[in-house]
Amino acid sequence: MIDRYALPKMKHVWSDENKYDKWLSVEIAVCQAWAEKGVIPGEDFEKLKNARHDMKRLNEIFARTKHDVTAFTRSITEKLGPEGRWIHFGLTSNDVWDTATALQMCEAADILDADLKALEEVLKKQAVKYKDTLTMGRTHGVHAEPTTFGMKLASWLDEVRRSQKRLARAKEEIAVGKISGVVGSHATVPPEVEQRVCGLLHLGIEPISTQIVHRDRHAYYVQTMALIATSLERFATELRHLQRTEVHEIEEPFSEGQTGSSAMPHKRNPELAERVCGLARLIRGYSVTALEDVPLWHERDISHSSAERLILPDSTMALDYIITLFTEIVTGLRVFTERMYQNVESTHGLVFSQRVLTALIEKGMSREAAYSLVQGNAMKSWDTGADFRELLRADPGVRKHLPGKELEDLFEYSYYTRYTTESFKRVGLA
Image 1 (cartoon, rainbow, N blue to C red):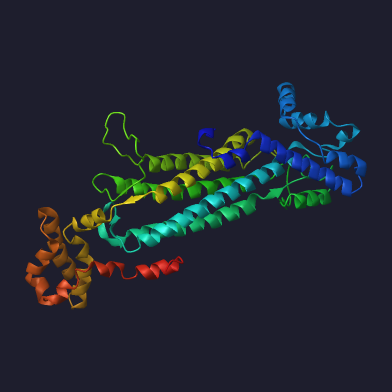
Image 2: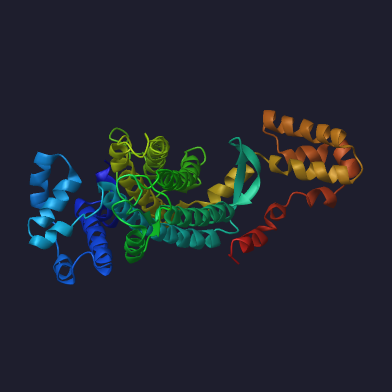
């Protein structure tokens, strides 16, 4: 397990203490439902409400029984009188396990939602700050046309909001319990008990269960974790590219006294962003395991159990960690705006090629002829380093159609950013 990365709140969700507390909540809710039906005497239920499990004793019993639910229930009933017979009455292990796990997964989802909201706020702030900061837009890693750094951040903001919606749907998907007995037939525990228990626990109900809540729900949940992690990897990969020495438009936070290399004192590496990418790959791997946990033999086998004891805590703990880490990166990001402009200018005006092309077409040239004229000058600029704008000014074919000011007006960077405000309004940023 990746316990070393776990933040305190998420670590608590998946702790044994919290797990067994949730199991106890389910057991007591079942006792309450039975008591309301008149099966458990009122005086017995009053005592059962104060039942407690004993972790030390639980572990001792487990060493002998090799069954966690049996050990759990015995650690409770040993401290009770005759009323202890009602603990786990009519239930099978997964009535408790799956219902309690749903409670843990909902808790984990709430923490992740808070993480995403914090990241959203940081991205909003930084997007507005760099809304009009000109930067080079690249396709295939090659200069294309200018955009703004704020536009990059605003696109991330919108993706984070989509992640929040997906997470809410995933939480809804797994927020169900089952109290339906050994094969889901309700033979030993009637549907009205299940209805009451899930209501007490604020969960929905698996309409038709087997011995378990169906694992397509869990797979959807873990796949959502994987998709959110993949979005973070997209963002982090961009920052890693922008921190490369040849680009050097940003740097992730680098504190005083920090070292980037044991051998090279000059190094300031994007290791935090790289960490985000590495753990995102781990989480994506868990999504495959979650899918493979869906098909089980008949009403249930146990092939899924060992895997999900790892993938559910690990995927949520890892995601909690990398969302928080990426929020810290964006908060402390160093942005080199002058370097961004230098990089825009480094290809000697080639970014204006499409603008000149369309202007020549508007003047009556065929697309093919205009493309050939502009590309010829662009290739000469690539090969010789000559300024593309100067080559166009000297080209008779260009001057014929775009004389003087008509050509010069095409070399304005503001042309590429004139709809930035409109785009920002689409994501609720003025």
